[in-house]
Image (tube, rainbow, N blue to C red; front, side, top):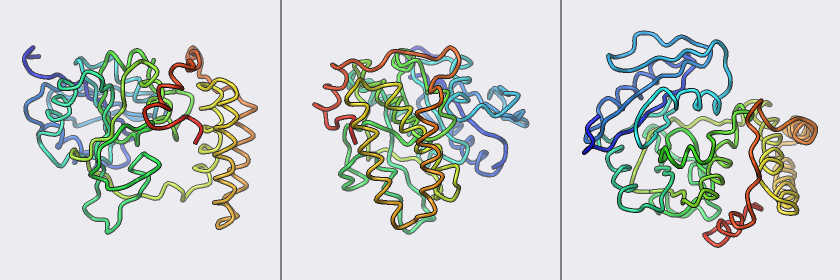
Length: 295
């Protein structure tokens, strides 16, 4: 790698079930200018095949879930910066990663970046892609305290301080814990509305498993990260929100309650993963910068 050019280790996670979208995303990475890239494709229960020259493959024998799959790729790439791309996401602009690198270089307080997410084929974009309470314009930049995980950039040193994505989650809310840990490491997580990535609009609520893991992982987030009584306040506020939402969709309440119970009964840690809770100073820092970890 050229020492004068920003270097990214890029982890693309896939199960091999979306070949067209996967190739679109990979091609968009290979078109990036002004950066050195070291790319690995992690096959989550799949052997990646027919990859372009210079793109590495790392096959996991079984689907270990999204967070653990991403973690598995980090040690197989170099670069001072890391970029995670889901297999159905892509980069519309060829200078996207160079622009991310410039933001990191200009502001050493930035630890992780989420861009604006777009779907050119959709008439309306989900507000959940803007991870803040007061959504506002998708082009407005701000501090954030969670990320939608399909396209995020992070300093490698900061990622190592966080100890990585929460492997036990499998999927859902892993972007909240990683963002909290970045803040706890002394860096900021920012949403930059002038940068963009592409992703199709898909409703994750189409499966009961979504509601189960949504509830379980909310409880796990509190148990793994938050000191008492903030942990109880966090679970309580989100439980109240879900109960109100379920009045419109009563069928969602049964899987959600099953996940909520499982969150309290089951071990929130993967083997060898356990880490300390956030300090009170980290909780205060998040609150002072825009959002207390209560709702």
